[in-house]
Image: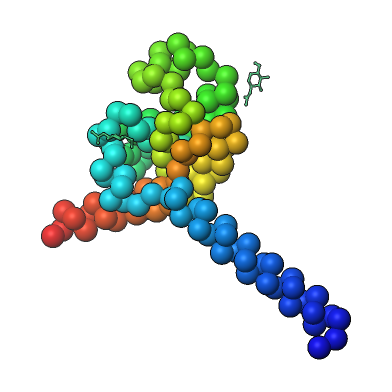
Amino acid sequence: MNVHHVIFAIFFAVVAISAVLADSSQQNDVVTYEEVKALKDNTSVYLFDVRRPSELVETGFIPGAINIPIDTLEDTLKNLSSEEFSKKFNRPKPDLDTILVFYCTTGIRSAKAQKIALDLGYINAKNYLGSWRDWEAKLKAEKAT
Ligand SMILES: *[C@@H]1O[C@H](CO)[C@@H](O)[C@H](O)[C@H]1NC(C)=O
Ligand SMILES: *[C@@H]1O[C@H](CO)[C@@H](O)[C@H](O)[C@H]1NC(C)=O
């Protein structure tokens, strides 16, 4: 092995290890259909739909979800006082340790939303990775059986 091989070997080892670490840390922050179904009636957990209002009209939404479009999320969580939040959404403003679950259509915008919330200190921000696509498909499958 010459020096280039050693450098490449170290590089790939580091890439592999960080991929594993990133994966395991994200597992806790991802929720499934069954989990969303179980928590959607729990008023101490927040389910946020971060799509545009027109998308909710078009497809429907998960019962109990609060619509905060992704481009207004940071402003809403950061700038709204508790009074303003509860006036607007009819729910108390979540605490930093409240469980927040985000979804969109395919889990991409909700991953961004999760990151925004985590960066603002919401330590229990989670992503429903399957999002609306998964919800709709599983719901249809359940109705069919
Ligand atoms: C609601 O969620 C919280 C936080 O996970 C949990 O402690 C509580 O037991 C849940 N309540 C119900 C009624 O499931
Ligand atoms: C929060 O409010 C301040 C002052 O009105 C504004 O400058 C800032 O852009 C707002 N933050 C976000 C994320 O919108």
